[in-house]
Amino acid sequence: MNKIRIGFGYDVHRLVGGRELWLGGIRLPYHMGLEGHSDADVLIHALCDGILGAANLRDIGFHFPDKDAEYKNIDSKILLAQTMELLRTEGFELGNVDITVIAEAPKLNPYIPQMKTCLAEVMRVKEADISIKATTSEKIGFVGREEGLAAYASVLIYKD
Image (cartoon, rainbow, N blue to C red; front, side, top):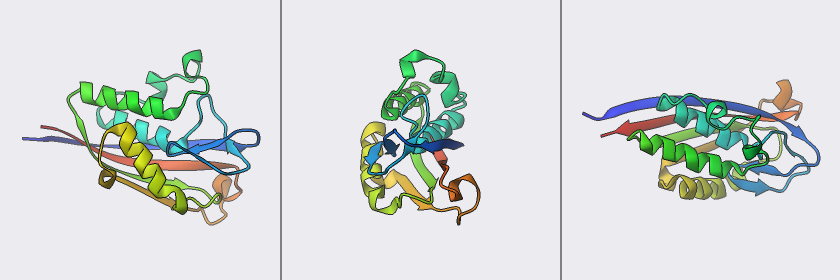
């Protein structure tokens, strides 16, 4: 019998001037970026948390603490690749992921195909196993005021 598990990830980062905007592993042209210890890729961070949670491997902060200089300004794709290694070490494989990013700006839909390609390469899975959606918060809250971005990720993993 196959062992199937689900996980859920959430992350949020503040938008600030003077930083590049990295989302889904790609750099987006925008006048602000996300503040954080790493490159602050909110999509990848939510995805890592969902994967780790599904495998009962704690969370991204446990494995990649923001107080550790080793992770200062690190490319989040490296964290995702290491998260996938942890998953596979436990004998699990990824079934699929469903990610929602909440942002008033920039508009993300034109970049979703490139994000899916990037994530599939890093995770060594098919693009068809990665769903990315973008929405706004209808001008409500910190996202609506364009103070930050948020992301949610649902993850299914399995073990034969």
